Image (cartoon, rainbow, N blue to C red):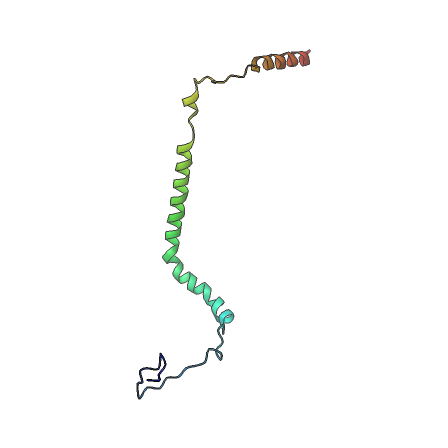
Length: 106
């Protein structure tokens, strides 16, 4: 056998030309040709994906706003509630503040 993998089939009459990867310039023209070509290519394809991004963003913003509104408490639900743990010193504190204000007025 003596053949290596990749050299098993021999096709006669076809000539293959290959350029060594060491002789190629991998970034040839990337800056001079690639960057100026970026704008026209983007403008040509932007109409394909831009509406999808706009629709997705609008949906996201609307859903987030609806979520925050649904989590907000309605103050009317708590209008008649009484504090279950009243501050025992609150009345005394309010009385002292009231007396201070009266003294300042005099």
